[in-house]
Image 1 (cartoon, helix red, strand yellow):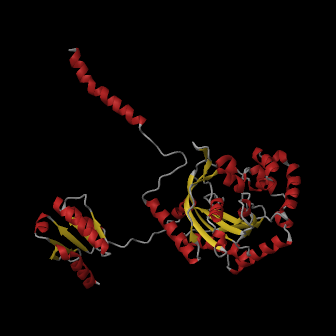
Image 2: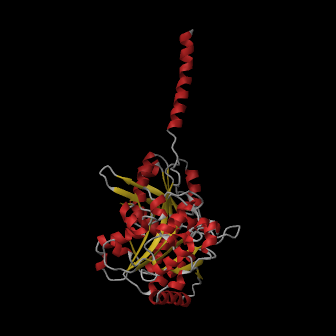
Image 3: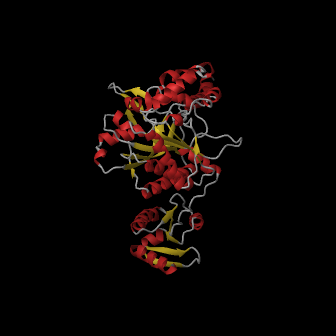
Length: 450
């Protein structure tokens, strides 16, 4: 009796064990990461396609840099005291002792590649663009992820103000092509190594007397890089900054003249902008022009996070061991752009319907269908199939749904007779054609229909 009870309970014990193992083997995506599939893939593909077309028109060449770089690259350029390096960079030591980081941004990577690959020997200015994933450890929220994608445009080897304006123009046109509404541009000049120290002294003197009103991060920034206080999003700090000296009043003649030219170029291009005297961008390598683009406001009328931004970085290449190389660039957040595209319900071009649908019945027919499909591909004829379906009726329903002009019907009898049925999906007319001439016969029928 006991043996009987044990034997009856054994399957129950096994099921419990299996369920327990299933729970242990259940994985979820890492916090801050996201899967991209279905309709979202269409958005990503469309964004990349539009960016490629824009890059081609303005003669930007594609560059791809490694996802992993030496961490020191970003400490040297982005800035050791920047939030990106201090708080957000994914960095680690390898088994071999190398100190590496997942790239948190692209500009230092492009600068490193520019020097390492001798791109300075190419005709200047050199125009490069990129599209790819980047990584920052920050609080995940709507449109903000720890793995995110950026589009970027960089111009290296040119100091003319017209290049600043062109980068802005390319970005503006790109956002328009994405069908985004209410695009606004904030712009400022943060001077250079000649005039910026004078402004820093004035800013520090102002902020020190109000340090009790600043957040702990800004009190640290006040000692390490006071310009970053202007970039703080805390309400108490914003109230202090609104009364702070404006950097535009401290620009030297060269920086003032450069900024004036940039604005004149934007006026000529009819690109509207807001002069924001407290815009600095939170990266060490910026000089002179800085700017940010914003999309439509939220339901409460508040500005959302910037879609992207950029500016001049005339000293970055030299900081990496190269010669003085003026440069300007921009980076845009793809996920934020897609979020706004969804809000305005951007429509996608309808895919071209397949010319031919291959319907098959039985194993022999499936084997021949694979060969027919390959022959059609080589002949550049669009084909659709549903090899997972065995019912002819269900396959023809799919052929009708996808808009195929003709269906090739192949069963065991047709295979043995080395023939195939060519069916006009609109009229229902069927012709029997030889298997070895099916491509030519299909082309003939398609030409007749045209």
